[in-house]
Figure 1: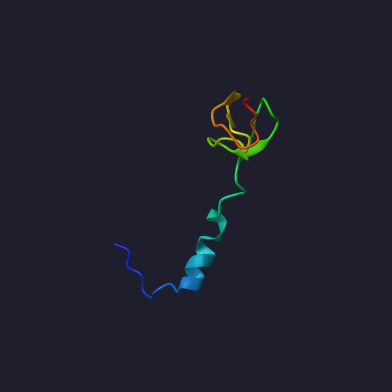
Figure 2: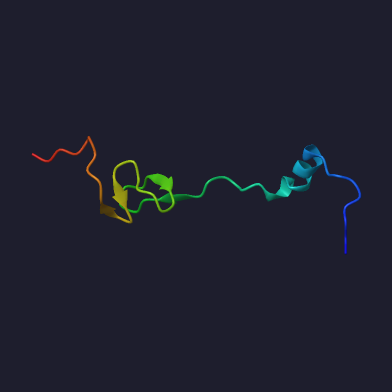
Length: 62
């Protein structure tokens, strides 16, 4: 059974995990507006997967 001889310091632990960092946040392009947004989130204009799902301030429904 393997037992560590010396405690690994937080600095060296961080070096050990340096390659595990996530890449930049994945962005999706809204097909109807062409706007970039986080995947599985609505776009700033209130669209999700090509459909209007949230009414925004800029909507003019008279």
